[in-house]
Amino acid sequence: MNTGDTAWVLASAALVLLMTPGLALFYGGMVRAKSVLNMMMMSFGALALIGVLWVLYGYSEAFGNDVWAGLVANPFEFWSLHNLLGTAGVAKGFAATHLVFTIPALAFVAFQAVFAIITVALISGAIADRARFGPWMVFCGIWATVVYFPVAHWVFAFNGAQSAKGGWIANKLMAIDFAGGTAVHINAGAAGLALALVLGKRVGFNRDPMRPHNLTLVMTGAGLLWFGWFGFNAGSALGANGQAAEVWVTTMVATCAACLGWLATEKIRDGHATSLGAASGVVAGLVAITPSCSSVTPLGAIFLGAIAGVVCALAVGLKYKLGFDDSLDVVGVHMFGGLWGTLSVGLFASDSASAGVRGLFYGGGLSQLGKQAVGAFAVLLYSFILTYAIGWLIQKTIGFRISEEDEITGIDSVVHAETAYDLATIGGGGGRGSSLVGQAHAEARHTEGAGV
Image (cartoon, rainbow, N blue to C red; front, top):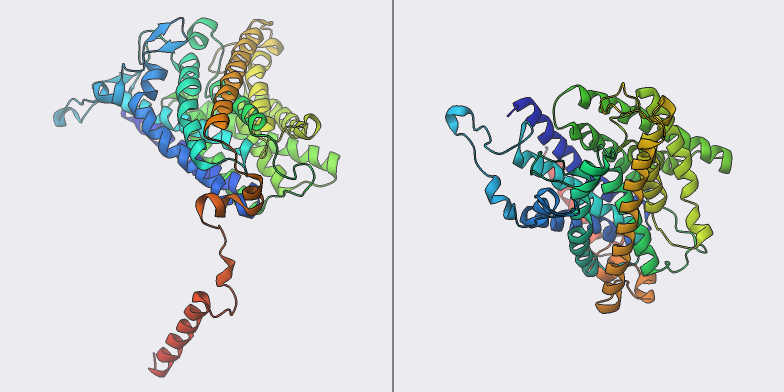
């Protein structure tokens, strides 16, 4: 066990955990004021539920020994993690007796848990304003079990890391997905598209203005996502080493370039560079560099990120042309950004980077590009088909979407009996708000009279 590697992975896990509340702020600011609490609750609900399922059987289903063709792992191998406990005792500094490479197995459990959480939470942006919270939680549990945990096994379970035999993409296809372009972003983006089709369009879609109600929240959330993403990508090196440093730099510069690319696209197309565009460009760059951050040079990352900003800025407009209501552009940013980032390994990969492969532009031919395409589209189709089936069953049984009347009233007040902004306490209405103001003035007069 290496204590430096362990410290870095645990810190990275905390950074990635922060991304889910950051996502809640990012998504929460993008919806209308009557939906912000529901939007944030969908992220926090996913965090709570997936954290429990991961410990019970999710980790085992993702990283247990493969039982069939690199597709399915044994969900009971590490049930409740009891067989991963154990340290060498005080005399040996509580060194873990179960390791994944140079870190305790439970540090790896923690790091991968927060990946599972945010992947599920990402989907919620596609169905903002119109999904009931209870059915959403049912969906999260089923989707994680039959989609995310198996796909994580395909992509992240390398032979000999936690178990002897892992998944097909990692070990047979050998496509490169360093930190989750396929397992996280293409997976969540395809699922978002499927659910948007199942639930249908919001009332007034493409007719009424549905502007973000609080761009300050959006920018704050984007900043937290960017901050946490260094744990997401650089933490995937699973060590405090040169690869982590390399990935940190490519992640930073690709994100900067993507922000510029999105803003330039907005300026040319619309005449204005917006704060929403800046925040969206940041996320697009982070998504695109995630699978490729270990295989491209810093210069390659700049080109990759800039193109990602343009591609995603254009892709978010497809929902109006094709007629699907992806509320917060999960498809345009995560599915298209994830696809571009995954395929770009086959174009921009340089053998001077730590992954050690060459893409088309560095004399590597089409071989790696073919591998990347097979992995990306296999995950996309699997996620879309199963998500559509899960969402359709929930809609037909317990009902996934709220009624039109409740949607117009506002999902926060109908589903959660709360509002984000209690404006009734502002002003002189004689209610509790005004009585508190009066009490404050009375206390001030009392202290002045006492000579304080």
